[in-house]
Length: 178
Image 1 (cartoon, rainbow, N blue to C red):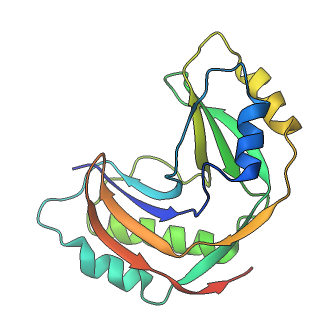
Image 2: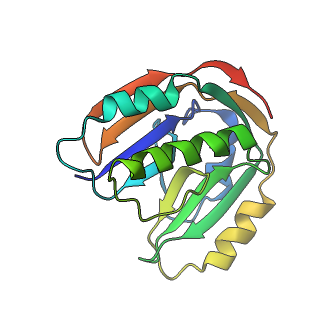
């Protein structure tokens, strides 16, 4: 069973900076994400049958604090299929957040979860499947977009079946700033 652990990023489709971003990319056929934004902490390609993840996740998150992230960049990357991803990111990845990610990934591997992808801090804002538009053009557009950086406390964590239901959820307490 494919699953993933996400930390919710509380932004909205109608935030003014996001509306300005969509206008900045007008004329480009981007499929913009609507009101569901998160950072994938770990994507699990295979979860062992019979392993109860609840106690493992409770242990991993019991002492965790809500990370404070300052989002200050719009960037673009492409996946193997050629699809381009426009995303929100940060110039400073807090050490405490990266340590939490590493602990979660190692904790899941320790019980037999198969994890094939590395962690990349990003919040998907839009996807583009037009293969005639070069990544370099999209990167130039993204880097020329200017917005006021903002800081958010990330408190809500969900463990989900890919394309399905929530298996575990928790709320992190007390924010931490690195």
